[in-house]
Length: 100
Image (cartoon, rainbow, N blue to C red; front, side, top):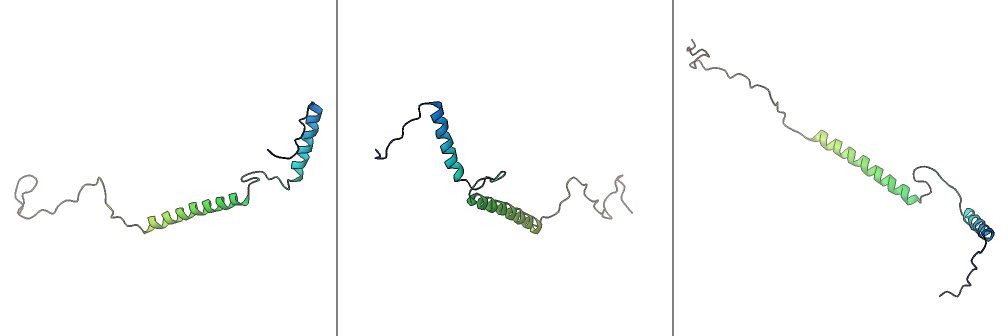
């Protein structure tokens, strides 16, 4: 147990209100600024982590774009009819007659 003297619990609502005001004044004395919005009232480590994350995302996007632009792929046409084969002079014509 601690040797510190124990404080008396407030018994009436007026005493509680006075203690709440005293506590509020102590807290307000330690606040320098209140910010609103993204990252409000966070330490600077939060901003550093946000910056590192954003640069990692951008770096990954640039890397993916470079890899995609350098990649080579053979072009194939899908679903097209093959070009006609040149007929040999001895092959029969489509009507079954030899060509002359």
